[in-house]
Length: 287
Length: 316
Image (cartoon, rainbow over all chains, first blue to last red; front, side, top):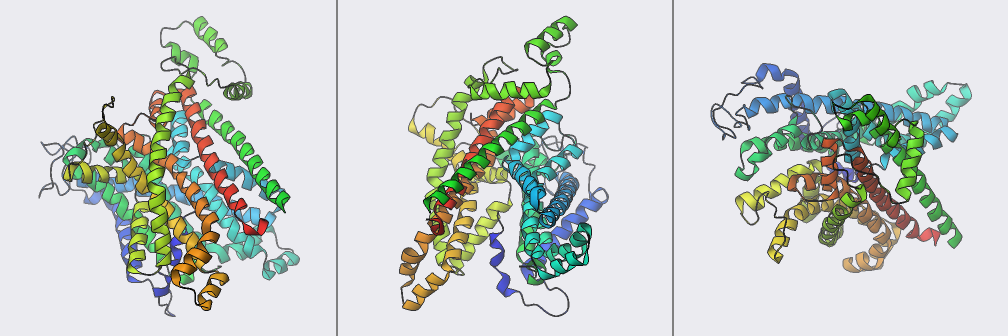
């Protein structure tokens, strides 16, 4: 639904024969993503203070030499909490986007290859699922079964399966009409073989780009749910929950409420920048 | 030829109805998955088993889920939305006023954002590649890439904390003057407008660019038509369908937006009602609110699709 910005900067990419080359904007995006990935992995080793410990006498403290990003509503160190929050935001979103894209793409390819009633029923059902607004779906599920990390991961992936399905199916249908597929069918290859060896290699580039865009949607939805108090539950906190905890600091403009938002924005904007500046070779392989 | 349009529109409507049935099924079963027996939760710790049994019978909880679903659907169709668990008022009464509030918010937002977004989208498509277009594109991508609550908090920081034009998070319940009214609406409308406009600008820009790339526009260029004439006479009339489609689709982002905006600004709308109902686990209220939202969403995307069908000149 929002993939139209891909045409903007593609002209500037100068491809070399040696593998893939990113332009400068793409490199910046990629390095910020790598930075957050490393933070998510090594967070417990680099945080200056334990996350749960009240270390500042003041609440909503300003930025200082001891507390680089100030302190939160209880006087806990904000920098440590944001670094640890990366684990929840990045981890949950990555798990959810993997499940969503894997199931969506597999179902999409099956529907495209099999066609017929299977295709019709799958498309209709997933379209119906798609016409429940995503935040509303999250609200209803959390109201029904309560919020825990596995529930969150599953809910987020269910919300984004229809999109991944529709995207992969549209690509696979095009490939499916090509001669080499007909040849493979005549050879008597199984559906599994067709999907794995003929279709998947031809759609993998755009599918990976789509995975990035869906990752952004999932980070945004997860943050939104956490912000409403329905996502990651205390004492743990992802970046959305950190904004919720410290929303009381808003009238003072304290760093505690500003920096978690910056963290989310830096992650989502860099993924968007990277996807926009992906080498043409990866992005448009089958278009 | 007209029969074809009619049958396409009718089949689109039929799909919408089928979708609505599937959605209501999903909403009902998602909310009845709730662990624990509703009757014993309602009556509390001190209830006797007989009382719980009686209430279960009275609420039809002893029946299979499919019968309860049918009963609920029939009730909905007759306008009976059930009784709220939390305060024992009819759900319809609770929703009524709140729904009007949300519609007002959505209406004011649409009134603001549609003209602005269309102007920005069309002009940036006309001046494609210029610095102006770059700035608009970067800004819209920026707004789309951040969560709605961040736009809301930024609006508060800018307009209330630094500029001090508006109060931060205080909202009077009684509206006595025009300035009060402005103060209540300003912040939610600003936030929502940003969210909606960004989507709308992108879609409009894409629709106009697509039309500008068609052979007949190139023909107009080759004939020597001026740039404004090329855009306004040749491209825009044909891009009208896709643009209206884009407007309807972007308005459906309002539904996600209001949930955050009403919560953060304490606006007494239906989304706030629903978020509160989730925290008290008031199932009939959640179900009805969810259905209202799904219905609105479906209405908007169906309208968008039907406009796309109607505006396709090949079907005329």
